[in-house]
Image (cartoon, rainbow, N blue to C red; front, side, top):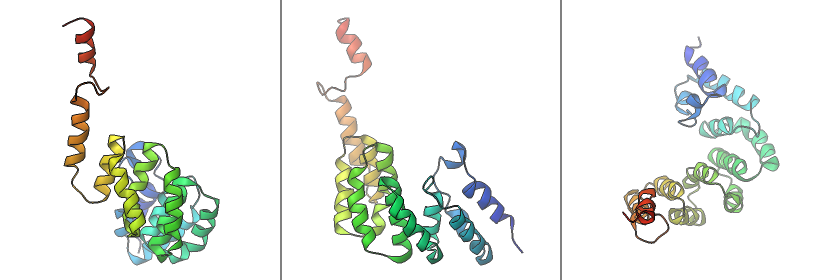
Length: 191
């Protein structure tokens, strides 16, 4: 007999389309709580809903290591670009440890420019356990954008204290272009 956990999965995972449902990321725990019978149904529904518009299904199939999804994932991989290609490569690697996915990630990561794309990808990289990818991830710890540097450090499992301190110091250092509004007002009005 199926429990209401499958319906919760459908509502909060497959059909999650509101900000409140998506703000905390992919709810992989919903898959972990399903029985074997429910998980088989969920796997089929994830495969059925696979497309390049949303990576939640891709992430879910990687998480449950769905060998049944591999043909469709490889097909989507050929059609995808940048961040989506990285998500698909990550899921394929989770399922099959296909080493070619490492090369795809190494090619696609430098193409990401916007901080939101970069941050999303940072948490996918550690699974590859590849020296070149680890080096790339480590390089993001020196990124000019605070959120990228912070999340790269966190994705590596390291303390973020130094990143916070570095960016806090940049904002308070004199003559570094980060003067606060109050400092500008004081200068303008000789206060």
